[in-house]
Image (cartoon, rainbow over all chains, first blue to last red; front, side, top):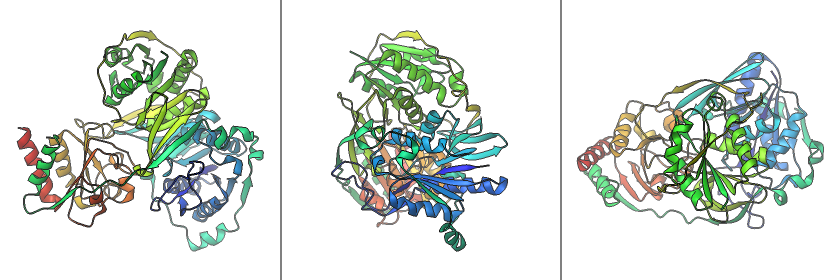
Length: 259
Length: 317
C-alpha cells in the first residue's frame, strides 16, 4: 500500500509564538521549529501499515526552506522519500489555498492513502483532511483513532465527542489521525544516517500548475486585519489548605454566584 | 436585510446550545435562517424559531446521518449558491469545521474557524496560540464561512417567523464516499457535553488513578458540569481521550473551569485559557496553573475535592 503522509513544520509550542508586525502572518523565522506533533502519529501509522503490507511511504510538506529539517526527521523515522513544495509565492497562503497547492502535488503522486495529523499546533483549524477530500473527490476519513486498511477498502474509528463512529470507504482515501492512535517511534541512529541519502524532491509553484495569483497572502480569501497580544491573566487569590480547603473553594464559588 | 445561514448542530431534532448561540449572533448580522439536516430535522424547526430563525431550511434525508460530513456540505453549499447569504455560521467543533471547509471550497468562499465573536462588518475575533494573541480576521473574497466556538455569545430567546422550507439535494457518489457504519457512545450519560458545558471540572496527574477520577466526576455532578482531563491523565489511560482538554484535545471556554491536580503545562493551557473563571487545586505551590487561576488552593485534591463536593451539595440544598 502506497501512502503519502502530510507533515507540517510548526513553531515549537514551548517557544513564544508571534505574528509578524509587517504582514500579520505567522513568524516562522524567529522561533524554534519542530514537526507538528500529531504528524508524528501520522508518520508512525503509515510506517506500521507499510511494515504489515509493503509499499512505500512518501512525505509531503509545504513550507519554507528550513522545513527540510522536519522532512529529514520524518525520513529518519523510516519514510522512503519526500516531496517538498517550496516557493516564496506561497507565503501567507491560508488553509483553503494551501489545500489547492497540496492537492495539485497529490494529483501527481500515486497513492492508496493520504494520512495527516488531525490538526496543527499553530493554526489548530483541523480542516486539511476535509479540504483535500473535497478538492480531490476522494473519501474523507478524518479524526481516526484506529485505521484498518485491507485491499481496496479502509475503515476507521472516528473519534466523536461522546465515543466513536465506524466509517468505511474505498481507497484512495484521505485520512487524518488523532494522537490516541499509536505511540510514535524515535528515529534510530541508523535511521538518521539513512535519511541523509533518501530522495527528497523539491517542487515549485510552477510545478503544480497553479497560478501565482491564486496563492499567497495577497490573494488569500481570509486575512488577518489586526492582532493584539493579550495581557497575561492576572493571578488571583492563592490560599493554603488548612483543613478547610473545600469550604474555602466553595466560598469563592458562592461569591462568584456559581453555587 | 440579507440572510445569514446557521447550520444547526442537533441530536435527532434537539439543537445543541451552541446552535441557539449562533442564531442569536446571526441576528446581529442579518436575518437568521436555520439549516437543519438529518433525522429529526423537522422537529427542530419550532425550537429554532424561538431563537429568532426567520426561515428554517429542513432536509430530513437519512443521507445526512449515514455519510460523513460531505453530504451536509453539499446541501449547505447549494443553499449558499441559491440564497447568497451575507455569511454562514457553524459550530466550531470537529464536524462543523469540516463542513465549513468543504463549503468554502465548493463556493469559493473564505473560511474562518474558532471565532469567539463576529462584528456587524463580519470581522471575526479569534484567540490563537492558546489565547496569548487575539486576531481580527476578515474574509476578502466570496461568502464568509465562519465557525464560532460554543459559549462565545449568550443565547437569547426571540421569536422569528420560522417559515419552513423543505430542501433536497442531488448527492453524487463522491458525497456518499464515506459511510458511517456504526456510532458508539462511550461517555456516561447525564453530563453536559465538554465543549458546551458552562462548568468544567478537570483532573490531571495528581488524580493518580482511573478509579480516583470518581471524585472529579462527583464534583462535576454536584455542579452540573462536564468532566475534563489533562493529557497526562488520558495518556495514562485514566480517562477517555475524547475528554482531553488541551492543545491536542478539546478547547473549552466555560464560565467556570476547575483544574484539580493539573500542573498547567502550556499544552493544557492552550485548551482552557479563555475560560471566564479559573479555579486551581494543586499541592505544588509552584505549579504554573496558579499563574492563571482566579482562585488557587494549595492542598491535596484527595481531601479538598470531596470536601468541596460535600459543601457544594449542602449549599445547593
